[in-house]
Amino acid sequence: MKYKVNENCIGCGACEATCPSVFKLQDDGFAKAIDDEVKQEDLAPAKEAMEGCPVSAIEQVD
Image 1 (cartoon, rainbow, N blue to C red):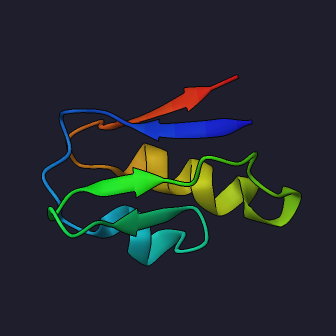
Image 2: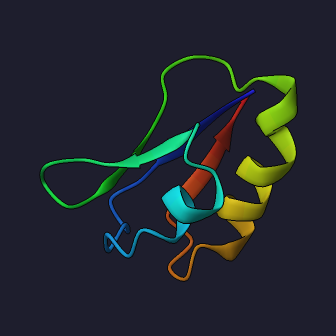
Image 3: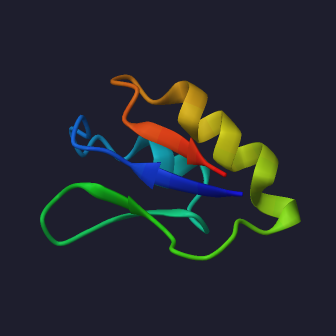
């Protein structure tokens, strides 16, 4: 499973705070998800980050 951060991102950093191994704020101030498959141990916090995003900017990609 992978995640993608879409154009709705406001750069609040909530996703990185919740799951820093999957989401990172970039130099442009917006978040980006890792390009690799999410590791088993990161699945729950990555989903929590997606569900907690205040602007629904994180999408699950199968």
